[in-house]
Amino acid sequence: QVQLVESGGGLVVTGGSLRLSCAASGSIFRVNAMGWFRQPPGKQREPVAGITSGNSATYADSVKGRFTISRDNAKNTVYLHMNNLKPEDTAVYYCHADVNDMAYWGKGTLVTVSS
Image (tube, helix red, strand yellow):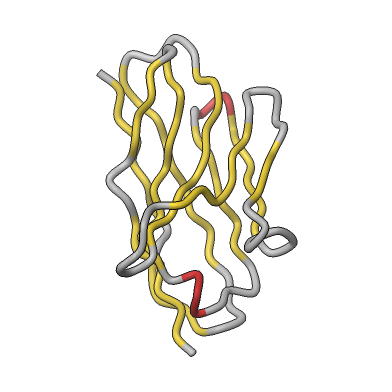
């Protein structure tokens, strides 16, 4: 069994920064792509950023230049560095990973950006 556990969410003022972490644990043989999605209040879940095992990253247009995704393969952990946060970034952020060729989700961590 594989688990993804997120941490690092919280309350921040506009223009502030946060770093989210997501660690994969359990019976892991291979971790392929990892990424972050978010679900703003009353809206559908949307992709934020993704990173391959070879460290190729992609971003949603809304976060380009402000967010940076990275990973530590030795720790099976993915990070999301969020800078210049805006109220519209308020959402539950979910970690996603392709582990052992199966898709897993974390339970989510809440990020609230106050104006």
